[in-house]
Length: 154
Image 1 (cartoon, rainbow, N blue to C red):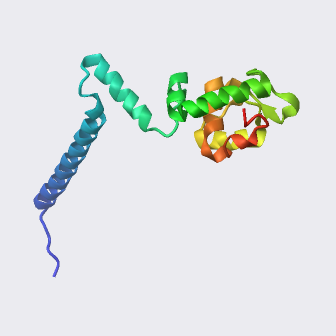
Image 2 (cartoon, rainbow, N blue to C red):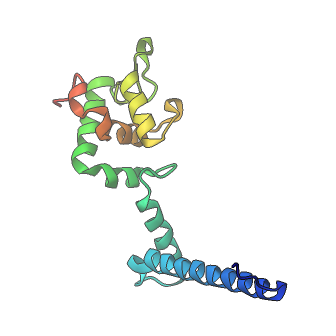
């Protein structure tokens, strides 16, 4: 025997389910806003908004259009300094270095290594890369570390 509701009863059930769903979504949203703001409690106004925005970028694996300071912080001082020594040794730090189509950019990165790094980080255009983006790709673990460079011991 099936229980049947009148049209009036069905409407109440639908509205109460929708209200509960809205309430749960609102509570989840408030919780995520508070979690995003937790490291930024000491800031006020515009500084707090900037802090929350940067905290969201920090949680991204590889944010779009990273600044030099952001990449330096993510790859660490060791990889940053190592990349500069390798770049001077390999290409003289020339961004436009592209002999025979096999090695590219300021680090003289082999094209296949660069392709692995591009897929891992999402930075797809080597023609427009700046030096810090090339460092982010080179320092990514999937590219195999500094042993792949002739000047890797620099």
